[in-house]
Amino acid sequence: MAFWIASAAGLAVAYLLGSTPTGYLAGKLLKGIDIREHGSGSIGATNVLRTLGKWPALVVLLVDVLKGVGAIVFARWFYPWFHTLPAITPPATLDLQSSMPWAVCLAGLAALLGHSRSIWLNFTGGKSAATGLGVLLAISWPVGLGAAAAFCVVLAVFRIVSLSSMLAALTAIALICSLEQPLPYRLLVIAGSIYVIVLHRANIRRLLAGMEPRLGQASPESKAESKTVPRI
Image 1 (tube, helix red, strand yellow):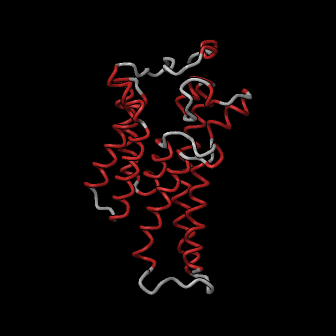
Image 2 (cartoon, helix red, strand yellow; image 1 turned 45 degrees about the horizontal axis):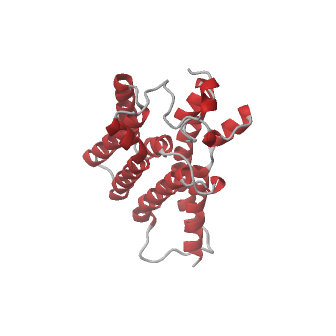
Image 3 (cartoon, helix red, strand yellow; image 1 turned 180 degrees about the vertical axis):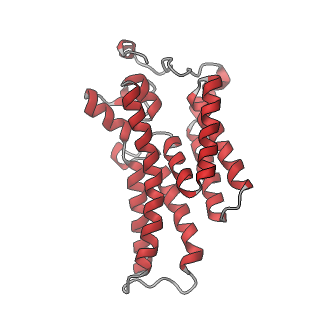
């Protein structure tokens, strides 16, 4: 029982790392606003860019990426550590070497869930793209860099963040399946990428309707007062 309680505690920490609402905190600290009531209503770096400016957006982006990295780094430290505690005896069928990738997989998914369903924001949040990039970089940096490169290329061509994020997620799936990676890591990337794409379903509808804003344009959901916010 102690083993499963410790495992659940580790996942809870990964979730809480992911659930830190960076964009929301930036809005409160810098302008005293709830960023969910401005622009697209998202707490992600793109809406922070529209609402607060480029430097706050860059900080939010970096912190959101580090949340994903932190969840994986924590899992890789915590899981072997509590295996050494005398009071915690893992099941005989679970050896550390074979179970470690699964623990990392679950921690990554917990971080993604935390960002999109933050306990601090009544289980709402962002679309987990930046946090997902952090998870990718931590479990397999070639996959993470490949996804980031795909994002940058698509963004440079089309200047649409949502499209760039979704194609980066698909690139991550292709890369993780083509490289020698443990099965849990492959499942993590496939499930996490699909989850990120599903969270962009409203963006997909706007893309099909030709209404998705390009980088630097106001979101269709922008409220009247957002017109007074300087654009970058």
